Length: 85
Image (cartoon, rainbow, N blue to C red; front, side, top):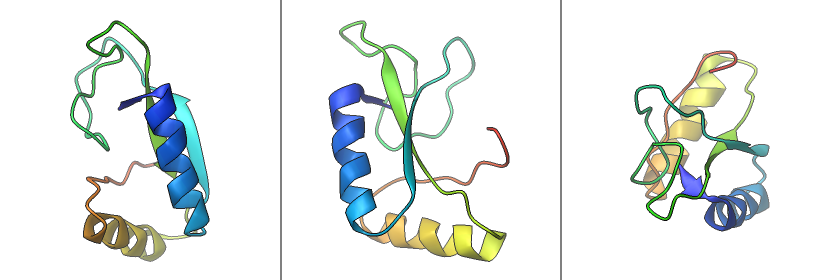
């Protein structure tokens, strides 16, 4: 989860690579989920709302896994979520 400015910058970088990208507000109050950057809480150190950068959707698990590997090679910490997660 990232501050809005960082999430938008990341989404632009990923979109240049031809990926379908969405920026969404991180859900708050639940257990931390894997994140693109350290800190998965819904509020940052400064109390601001954090956002998640989502890539996809994909037609099948093979396409999602392939993209996950590409993002890992670029230094990101992606994860695969199912459906509306």
